[in-house]
Image (cartoon, rainbow, N blue to C red; front, side, top):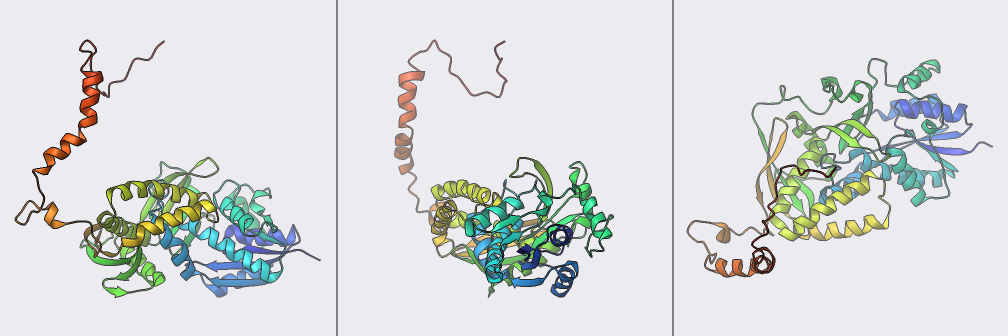
Amino acid sequence: MAKKLILAYSGGLDTSVALHWLTQERGYDVVALTVDVGLDSDRAAIEKRALATGAVGFHWVDAREDFIRFFAFPALAAGALYQGRYPLATALARPLIAKIMVDVAREESAEAVGHGCTGKGNDQVRFDVSTQALAPDLEIVAPLREWDMRTRQSEIDYALKHKIDVPVTKESPYSIDENLWGRSCESGLLEDPWQEPPEDVFAWTKSMDEAPDEPRYIEIGFERGIPVSLDGEQIDGVSLVGQLNSLAGEHGIGRIDHLEDRLVGIKSREIYEAPAAVTLHSAHRALERMTLSKAQLRMKTSIAQEYAQLIYDGLWFTGHHQDLASYVQSTQRHVTGVTRLRLHKGQATAVGTKSPRSLYATALATYEEGDQYDQSAAQGFIHVWGLPVRVQAQAQLLSQPDEPLHIASAEPQDSPN
């Protein structure tokens, strides 16, 4: 009796060829699983393609709400941007898809799970490690790590030979992944970092030439670090992200041309579109500047980098993530308020913030009438603050007048031969 395998199936080139290969070359009974985290795809068409390619069954799971609530918005609250730029759209979806894949494997009494990830990418790690954490007994099969097809062109040729219906042509060889939080595009001419991405790569955002000349102002409301309203109207997370993708994308916001460091140690050129994510990160940062203390902001910056690295590296289901998430949740207790943004020519700029938990006090900051700051107290503060500087200067720097003071310089130092 053939082993049953649950395949994470998008309906694209890699997973369609993988489905055929698993059934014909490895003899698995393959159940195709498509997890909707914001797919711009036709469910009926994907199911038809899966069954026509050889699947013995098909599951479609709408996970958009869980994706935004439990993955995208916690990453937003953390301020997680990989290498300071990438909002981690694909990376955030993988642990959720892996979790659902394990659930379906249990439901179907399957012995194995599979995916269409390459042996040089990040997603293989995210799928495999998440599955190992949730169901270490399941076999993990990754056809792209096993077969002898080494290029996307060879996969296209395989699909043509076996009459597999795939939405990829020799003229458009891009590899695309998308969900509500963002869209990624790679391969083809994009592999040359000297070449400017052509406009046909972008689907969610207008170019600067086509973006409106007049800015659009919006207001985003937050409660405890989570966005809950748009222009004063309460709105659920899925709808909010969808509307912001349209609004911000219309103004060319969210294009990211990133030469990033993959987990496996190579650099990769990725083109991202993330209008909603970029806009929400801008709004959230502005509100945090108003509601977090200097020390909290400093530590939060470090935590954001660690949180982003953890997500990128596929370590969502770990104790380390639980610890970081607890800290982030604590920092968000008072991140409640509204940010007003100007959307214009590729930029989502925070132009106003207000919060009932604001640490900004006009009476202390103003130079006008009503100033409550006691400027006479500054002299005593500076005297105490500068105490260790004076002590060191008197004991070490000024006590040996023959020694020159070493002042930091940008001049290169001579190296010994």
